[in-house]
Image (cartoon, rainbow, N blue to C red):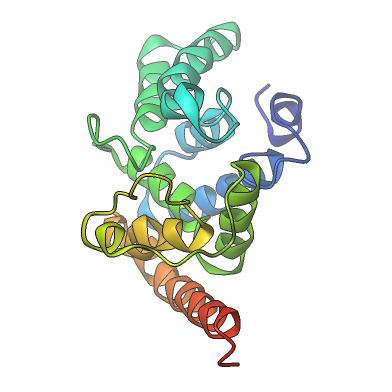
Length: 211
C-alpha cells in the first residue's frame, strides 16, 4: 500500500531540498489543497509521494528530466499496486506537469494543479529560505552575490557569474505566486511571498552593512 511511510525508503533523509521532508510537506499541503478544491485525494496522494522519486540532486540532466523519469517509475510502482491504467495515467500527468521550468505539459486537471501548487508553495516562506540556501550550498554557490545588470534584465548570468540563493529568488521564487493555479494556494502564497521577499531585503541590508 502506498503511504508516507512506504515512500520514506525512496528519498534521502538529509537532503534539505528534495529529501523526504520535502515529500512530507508537499503531501500534506496537496491534501489540504485537494480537500479545498475538490480534487481526487487518491490521485493527489500518489502523485505527491512519487513526484520526485527520480533526480533528487540539483543541477544537470538528472534534475532537468526528473519529472519524466519519476512518472515512468510511478507507473511501475502503481502497476505493482494494481492500479488501473487510467488512474496511473492521471498520476503520471500530475508528475510530468509539476516542474516549474518545463511548460511543455502544463497541468490540465485539478489534481495536477493541486500538485503543482503544493510543490511550489514549498519554495516560499520560511521553508523557502531554508531550501533556497540549501540548494545553493549543494550546488557550490554562495548565499548572496550581487546580480549583474545582464542577469537583472534577462535572467541569464554573465560568464562566471554565480547563481546565488538571491539570484534564485529573483529568477524563480519571486515569481512563483503568480504561477499558481488554485485560489486556495494563491491565498497561502501571499503571506509566504511577503516573508521571503522581506528576508532577502534584510539579507542584502546586512550583507551591505546597512543593518
